[in-house]
Length: 414
Image (cartoon, rainbow, N blue to C red; front, top):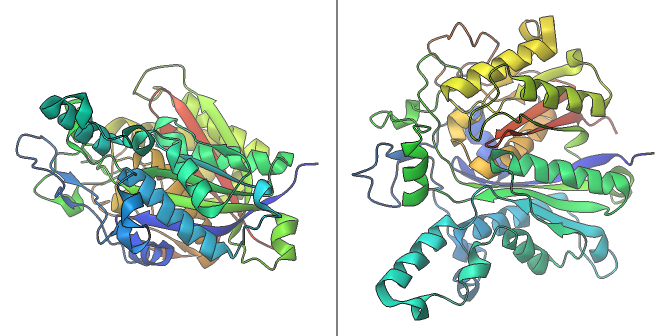
């Protein structure tokens, strides 16, 4: 019999708040975190906007000598993990350390450090490369650093599946607990890819919004005038625990993680499948895993990137999977309209948001939804949060290479 798994801690570090409560408050107020890029000179870049972290000082949580050894994506993960563990009340001891694991992914890894160290190499030769360069940049060092810092000695791994990384890390951690390989997992993802190389690369693919004169209105999922995504940065970490352990210690349970689906498009390196077939299968797989029908889902936190193809095809897939329910009682929103697209960390942040939806009984809006698109015709909770309780909620994540993930959360009845 599969063990049941619940969310007992949430740590969010996002462009709209450092911490879960500030992030949630901003989402409920329809606050947008997008602005002009301040990290580098964007004069020659077609896209000049992003959702940067505001007010994040790693020295408030991490010693100065350690900060120098970490790319920002690792710093964000450490802080989000600290928030999540404190929120959960889980204490890692020598007795339980081997039963607490870490799975923290990233889609990009340490781009800013790679760029900086390459500059040093070009200016001064190989002797100028920092000895901390490799452990500062490789993706699994977010999980490694968190494991070392917190003393978690269980499964230690990292997921790198583009924009599905965070959702896959949480879903894979869910499976580890179900199978009895661990009793608790510190899981999610982190991203810090607002760098010249990354923004330039995505910009030259014409994936990014160029609404530079109106940053707050640039990320507009499902709107007719959407013109690309807006890059964000940050981290989302959840504490997952086996239900009976969480109950024994009197944990504060946000929601139960009830289902997990995966699928592959086998179609194109960057574009989603034109008939939405991969997205349909991943949602269907998650519903089957949860043992529920489509009508049980009250809310979907959509992948909703604000790109012309994704939003149209995700809408199409939702209508195919949910049938009449898609237009009769199902709410869909994209919090990327406020946070921007956190790439590999998006699914982890949005999983945390979805668990908070079930806890608080409020649905975050899709802001900047002003001009309806005939091909995007669902209830996207436009522009204003909505107070309503749902029993089950879904979170979708789709990534380059056709990698898809879907998580289903259940309102906790225990």
